[in-house]
Structures are given as C-alpha cells and as structure tokens.
Amino acid sequence: MNPYFFNTPSSTDLIGLPAGNYHIQEFPEDIAAGDTIRVTIGNVEKKVITFSEENLYPDKIPKQHDRLARHTEIELKFPYKIKAIKLFLDLGSRIVFVYGKRDTAIVIRPEILKPCEAHVITYYNKKKKKKVLNACFFGAGNPVTDIHRAMTECEVVIAVDTNSREVPGVGKVAATTAIEAYFNEVTGEACHMRTGPIRQSIMINPTGNPEIHGISKMMHHFFEKNPQIGDRLVGIITDSELDLLKGRNLRVAPFFENNLLPENTTLFYATSDSGSTECMANKLIRMCDNKSEEYLNQYINQKHST
Image (cartoon, rainbow, N blue to C red):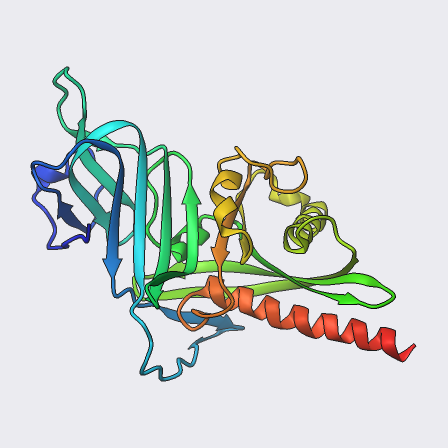
C-alpha cells in the first residue's frame, strides 16, 4: 500500500507520541487485522555530502537521464494481530510510529503499537525485478526509515568488502578492505560523514564465504585495537548475503561458523553496483570493492614476479 502524506495532524492525534513534525498515513477503516504492515515511500531522493578536513562539499552527481525512481519499503511486524489506524512519520528523526488497536474481543483503546521487528529497504524496479540498493533490519522498537539516520546511532560504521580469485599454485586468494566512517549529521536531504582508518588483509583459502570470513577477521582486529568502544554500537556494511542479514541481526542465525554477532554490532546491506552518489553506505562499500580489487591484483602480480 502506498502512503499518502499530508500536513501535521492535530494535537489529539499526537497522544502518546514525542513532539515532532509529523506526516501521517491513514488506513482504511475496514482494513483487515494482521501482524504485518508494509508501506512504500516513492521517489526517494538523497544527496551525499562528505567532510574533507574542515571543508564540506557535495559529491558530484552524474547526469542520469535513464535513472530509475527509488523507493523505500518499510515493513513492521508485530507480536500480535493489530488493526492499524494511522502511521506517523517524524520528518526530523525519521522514526515511524503505528497508531492502532490490538485485534482482541476485549475493547482496548487505540495506542502506539511497538513492532517486534522491522526492515527498511531502498530499491528500484528494473525489468520487473526489485534491485535493492541498501537495507536495514531492526529488532523491537519504533524503527527509523532512513539508513543514514540508522547509522548515526552507531559509534562507528565499518564498510567491509572482499574480492577473491583462484590463483594456480596458491589456492583461493581473498583480499579484504575495511573503511571506518563516522556520521556527524543527517538531514532530510543529505548525509554528512567523515572517513577514518583503512584496514586491508590477504587470506589464502578462507573458510566458507570469503566475504563473511573477511568481516569476521576485520571485526576481531577492530575490537582488539579499540577496547574503549565497550558496549557502544558498531555498524558493519556488507554487500553479501542480504537474505541472511535479518536472522543475524536478530541473533537467531549464526554470523560466522557457530558464532552470533556481538550484541553491540548491527549489519547493514549496501550494493556496490549502484547508489554511490545517493547513499554513503553504497559509496563506502564501492570504495572498499575498488581498493580490494587493487590490493588483490597487487598481491597476485607480486607472486607472479617472484
């Protein structure tokens, strides 16, 4: 169902909500009860802005006359069946709230209902298929509707990408690059970010998926070198195994071998194929992909020259 957003509702509609600038979607009165709500926001536009020392500059956005419209899908799952009345989107915090009633024979007044899990996926349609640009998966609570805003909740975000190749006489060689990033501010139109240290490593015949093995190795090194992080949230951007991210973030599926993600870690998905001029997650994973390919070629060329 596509939402129809209009101006800030009256104060009576805001009972139970924090102060904010809200747009809302009203659901039909005869909507069936269910445990899942899915809405789509069309024509999503973003500008990528980065920090270079003390200067702030926008990325150059190439002219793309055939660029396909971007959409954001928000899916909220509840631990019980509900009848949704209105969906509120805070345009400042980008947090989404659902106002409705539990589907029960006992009369209960409407309230702000808290989902037990949610996902936010930005995509475009290509040849009747959904091409995912980036995605976030959340546990219980009212989620944000923007990956940039979600990443500002992290003390640091680390993009990790691994490129691998079979090398005769050596085996599978995997080159991994990790780039740290710090998000300073997010507005409705832009993402502000500065990058930090870059880590790179070579693995020979990595276990399982080289991408996941590479992330595990980089996480171990990061936490070993940064004990001051403590239990503050760390985000990891990957372009691998999108279908497994939800279970891994909810700690119901192992991340690497039999190990769950650390409690203070959350995974974000971003593709390196497109979206790098619109979203910093995509820009970072593309940077990692390029650097890993360079590092891999350098290693192989050195091997051939010896």
